[in-house]
Length: 94
Image 1 (cartoon, rainbow, N blue to C red):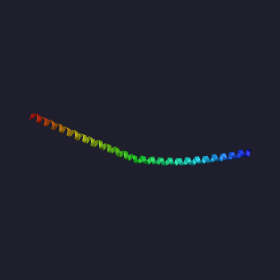
Image 2: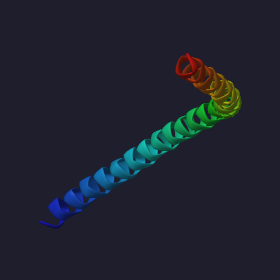
Image 3: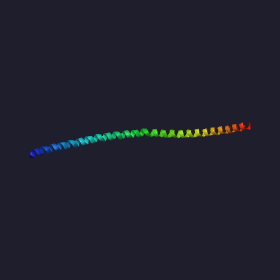
Image 4: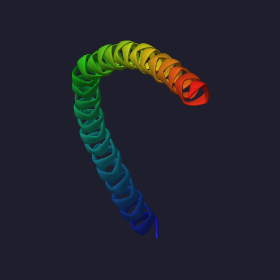
């Protein structure tokens, strides 16, 4: 009976040792995967920052161009209003 308990204990210790080794190997693989993921995230950030800066610059340029277009539109609107008033004046005068 004692021999059977000793054999089962030995088998249990071997299984526990194998599980510990498996745990450390799996943990090491997981650590490597996290390192690769971290490197990918850093590369993504490094490539995204110039894109965001370019978008910011494009947005500034569009706002500037929009302001210029708005000024030109306002000027054309004033000219049309002046011409409309002159036309009405000449039509009423006739």
